[in-house]
Length: 366
Image 1 (cartoon, rainbow, N blue to C red):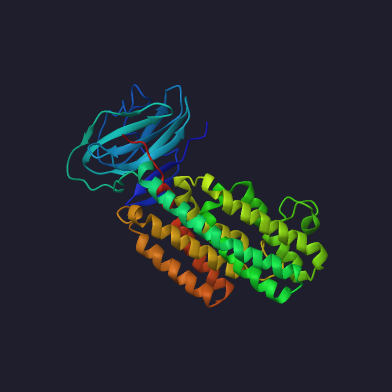
Image 2: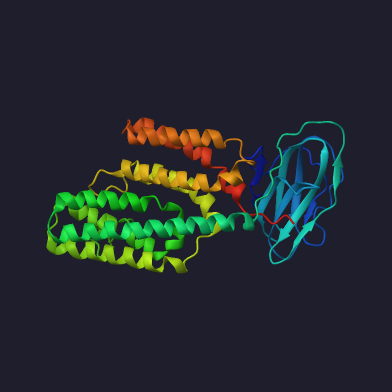
């Protein structure tokens, strides 16, 4: 069985340390279970070391190496399956430590407190774990923001529909750009949109007939027709369907729920998707507006970062640099800088945002 990756929270920044380490073990095998969590740490010492972990419970679980008193997390392994093993490699300083095991459908078990003596400085600093209760109010706040934005989106799409039916394509193109940019700001809610999101902003990926495929609908279907000069008779039904879908999503969004973890995961994924799909032209169906789409995605990312700031500020030393890099990227996109410069900006920002999901992931440590 392949060893699982280990995540270290180093001064609030996520570092992935691959297992299969060659460092001498710091212990016999550490038990990951509800009954015997953390047992097996037999040779406590400071410095670089490897903890062999083995899940000998009947259910999968997460295991955390924590500061014994506070429960702050030094490193963790997610989803360690029953009967599986992993090596946790870490540079430990002096202090009091305990493993905590969060086994599926059971409480959190706290292992024995182990003291590493002396005055040695370790590598990672512990990070205060985030609870689901910390994130729920933020998710609710973001959901209210999205609901308001959807309400504002409806008349923009209605105007697009109206102008296409009137055959006023120059104005309709402006309508499309305004409406699609407003939609692109809502990236963290896409999972909550479900099938409606795919219908509204789907592409031709996986469609055998490409832009001629009957299943190609939504913003990009309208974009393709507008910029190719498609006759009103065939484009108007597509615009009407888009307006109907957006109105239905807005009306029913109150019954949807944005998962708390989506806030942090999507903060990184929005930027990464912009880099992979928009900046390379994959989502351009004639308007040449992918740079504007990226600008809207960055605006949506800024909303998420601002929302998550109370959680990130005490946990992520890289937050100030991330905010700076976001501002630089937004300025360069707004100035229509060269693609090379914008790609460099977005790549740097994606790297900045990579630790956010791990830092903000809810953890059961007590």
